[in-house]
Image 1 (cartoon, helix red, strand yellow):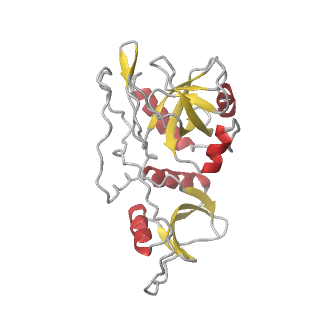
Image 2 (cartoon, one colour):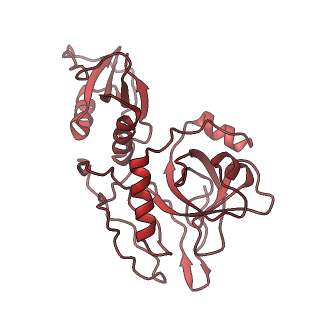
Image 3 (cartoon, one colour):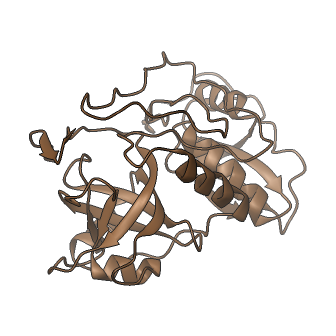
Length: 287
């Protein structure tokens, strides 16, 4: 992983940084050179790193590998390779509104992108969240130093802070003018840490209590699988922070949110789990 030295575009200095919780809105352009694979250029994220990019016009979301520095203009957040732009549905020459969110994908997806292939598209972003993102983009100044703050779905409560000590937001490069806060209420940035506890071969010495099932689970509904824990106390602490349920499956304790009546409700819960630091959270059908 490479960061590199600060560099200047016009009168603005950009400082590369390993920002795990990076989540920003801006504009994407399409590279005219020989950028290969589903890749992109970014000004500050490590090389390489992986991001989920959402087209705010359509809600389509794909996984992209950041491989280069750029774009070398201050009014664009990301420069997409032709293959990435094609998968995202952005035409060459477009200046398209996008969301860029750093993620930690599984190795099989990393390998596919490294070899020049594609991975399946992510679930489309619900219209309610797209409206929040578009308003956030409209309210921010043209130059917004990373990271910006993840939005919340309209009418939902702010996400509770994790028990771990909170870190302050990354400071902006000094050459960039202050940005007025957007009109849409946003939660404070939460450091993205790995909440899962690795499974070990240590035997459980005390009989485990029966886990409380996810309330109202019925066939044909949507669940959000937050994570699987080898220690019951850790699972219940995570569930309490998210308002989720705990179910024992074999030797592991699964934390799940739901069930939800439709995909849109599950998508909102998925955003909540990921913003709380559970980057591997996924939507699944209820058993």
